[in-house]
Length: 174
Ligand SMILES: [Zn+2]
Image 1 (cartoon, rainbow, N blue to C red):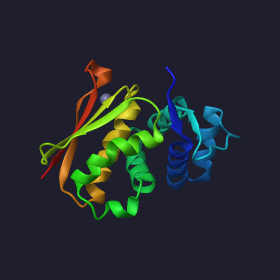
Image 2 (image 1 turned 60 degrees about the vertical axis):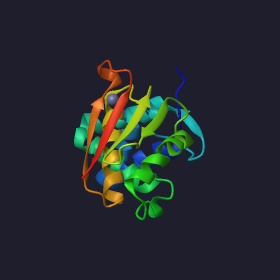
Image 3 (image 1 turned 180 degrees about the vertical axis):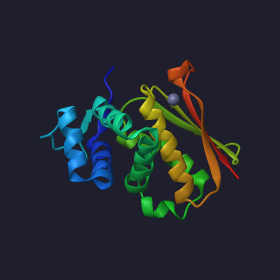
Image 4 (image 1 turned 90 degrees about the vertical axis):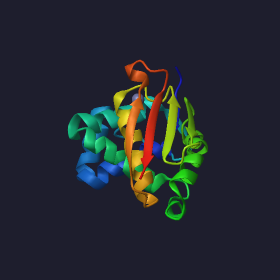
């Protein structure tokens, strides 16, 4: 399957690594993944495997919490209109998710169900094809709550990797 993702996503994760573990951390990651000399361009598309490799590196070396934090970081820094996000509601933000998703990821499908404003559902088809991708989306949803100053919880209620038809994240708003 041909999965492509914008370089801006890879750059954001590499920036996260650099911010957390310094230039040495980024160097180490690039070396282990064989991308030492690669210069990813924000607007260009690359194999999503590259993103997967970076996230797996974070998971392998720093654990699940660090992968979730990478999701929070990318949501905070890459979120389209990220500064505007602070003035919007979690529901409005959720409604924008699918179009934001398709602007950077050229594979899989994302849609939302906001019919119950207390239980927002974010659904993905063919997106969480490795564990760390699911962890990252959990972090992204948590950051969406934080950025909109909304109290609530996120749970990954369905997972394609566990045999469900799709991945589903439930954002429960208090
Ligand atoms: Zn999943």
